[in-house]
Amino acid sequence: MRVKHLGLMPYEDAWTLQKELFDGVLNGREEDTILLVEHPHVYTFGRSTKSSNFLLSQEELASLGAQQFEIERGGDVTYHGPGQLVGYPILNLSHFREDLGWYLRTLEQTIISVLSCYRIHGFRIEGRTGVWTGTTGAEEKIAAIGVRSSRWCTMHGFALNVSTDLSYFNHIIPCGITDRGVTSMMKILGRKLAMTEVAEQYEDIFNQTFQGFPREPKPAF
Image 1 (cartoon, helix red, strand yellow):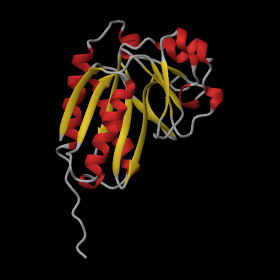
Image 2 (image 1 turned 60 degrees about the horizontal axis):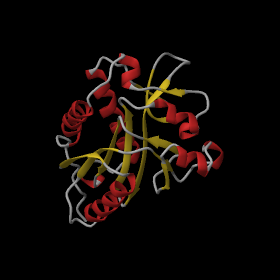
Image 3 (image 1 turned 180 degrees about the vertical axis):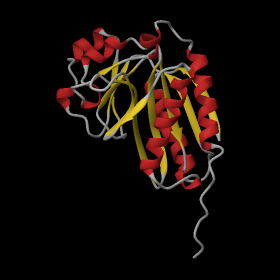
């Protein structure tokens, strides 16, 4: 298992790297890898995106200094930007458990565990992939998750709002959800966090979760 910290990297460059690693892991040339990265301002459109959930014209998008990409993950439109920890686990789930639902719940748990290190209560909402904080009826999303899998190999992943400028979410209906807002660790704690610190915390928890996972025996035929 490898963890690569990429720092601030343009979305397209990280996407290209993901696809190269995905092909390598899928075909047994590369080991399981997670990329941890920040992006300049960008909006990404998953396979389920509704055009009405993106509220910017191309001129307005350019004035924000942001880009947009249509990508192969599931889900609707979301935002990535500085101050957001983005993780792309490129894993062969045959090494762990061939169950995409289990994988999504496990990713959620890694984020919940990181938040708990900062005394932030993160939780799931049934039927809404991602991690939430707040109180019942006033929940706010703090981490979005959207993945792609093929032959049990994964790409794309999660975005955790650490010290994110949340105003960029005003230009979309995040993940198509109209009745809940978004938040960040900085907003909850009232202070800015060092991205390197949060990324290292996440690396530790990710490794504890996945490296120690018992690999399922393959049936003999």
